[in-house]
Image 1 (cartoon, rainbow, N blue to C red):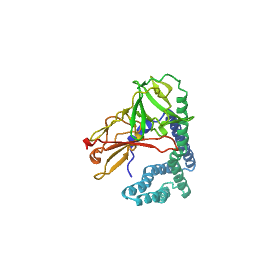
Image 2 (cartoon, rainbow, N blue to C red):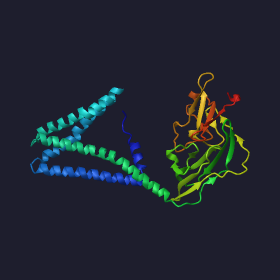
Image 3 (cartoon, one colour):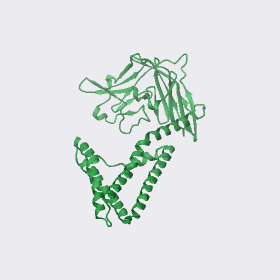
Length: 361
């Protein structure tokens, strides 16, 4: 078990949408109000019985002595034990040992206070303290889903309400390449102007639009705010809807590549193989590609490029010219790259392999 990364926690909070921050602030205020109401009612109850001082003393002992003691019984041994036994002890301490220490500690402390608290009063305070400790966790568990869905609905409404305008991207020409076993493929790049922030890309399949962030992105990839497309002649030409912000204003536009009736001659898909990586002629969507290196004298092992290397993110999921394998010294020089294309749901996928030239072996 490792310690809490507070920097990561604070960074995650700072990145929450404004609605989420406001909603969780309201939840936090409500939790504090409930806890405050409980404490006020308790204080009045014990004050009428001339035990206000004992109540305050037990509250302080609960906060500064019994709570750290009960928590340490769970955490410290769990960190010292390894393997399945650590998890077994964690649940044993959480559900049995720590609650026993918590309630027994309140009984013992209440007994030695002056005026002493009765057994029922001490147990009541132990239970109310435990309720106030568990209340934030219970509220977070119950409200996380509704707040997330409400925030997502508001964000989607804001996107869909954005005015339709001309696409501000610089659209590069459609390039055509020939791939072995696959045949003709097309590529195109959309280059964003300075200051543009791309919020979302939807793709139309049949009559339905879907968010490409939560579905397969084999037909496109992103490099910062730029969008790069790659599809085969046997696949449906991409139909996209882009949502963005530019100069503080939201907008949206549909886009579909325009393939000329007399396209330029298809080029050979030449990949430059370096010792530490590859230089494809155009950006490749990460989900399409796998890279191969030698395992043994003559056996190629293909490794999907979907798993991220150190420093990579799925937000920038293109295999760009200059792509480098972080562990190339361990893997060895890349020997081949494979690209997959999907025709239809009822048809097998097409796979092309481009191998390292023998002269570079």
